[in-house]
Length: 354
Image (cartoon, rainbow, N blue to C red):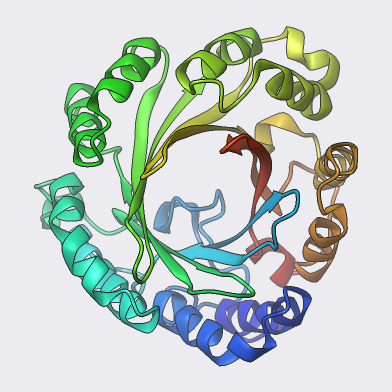
């Protein structure tokens, strides 16, 4: 067992880097890990606590993510929360912004970050004083490394502060900043009263316009609602047929019952918008083994890189245990410019404690 979570995650990265064909970028990737999680993962495996970070159910302050699209080389991606344990909300927010700037500088996107900073501050709750106490922060920071081309940084802002009308209002301002007010008003009219804002994210890369994404979540809606609504609000980027196949593959016969926790997100970029649908793995599957089997079969059936998914699962500790999923956090499906993609968010923490 590694001495700290950071040591364990660093070791996992060293195995993942060659699998993604990124040996020439290894030092760069490890430096990004140090910047984002150097303080937040300096804990013995098993010492993380749910109240310390909302990124994972057990409080582990990092997730690996995998996005698979037919014909495209996948990126090595992870996201984490910066800052040592015990910081109050204002202190953690300050560390988060400092870390974002450092990561953006590493990625060659310092100017892009400076241009995005006013919007990030606008999305941040005004009252982050000591009265909010220590615990989860308002920012998460993601990085993405392609085999060729420039890396990207994603800045996530937690929307679950203040009352819900204020959350919707901030989401509207975020969409407006990308020139997507009309599209977002149509989506909000459909979502409001059924889903609630969860957060926003901006992805920045050197020499490219930023993209933004708004996340909303719900519990207990019928699967049929998502299957009928998301193709409408996506402008057909996420087809009803694709979503129907996905729900059948992930849920099977249980699709006739109300869904449990799910997340719908809308991305805005220079070419338009796209919608992604995600399921909470802890709600959708009985075990990590079931999640792995269903996800692998889905990828096989869609002609996506099931081998990379299975290798990633193995390198992060494997789908073991008989209780609720610990490795799988969220699984999802979307479509971008007509091409379907599947996403997986994976928690490396529990595997390092066993």
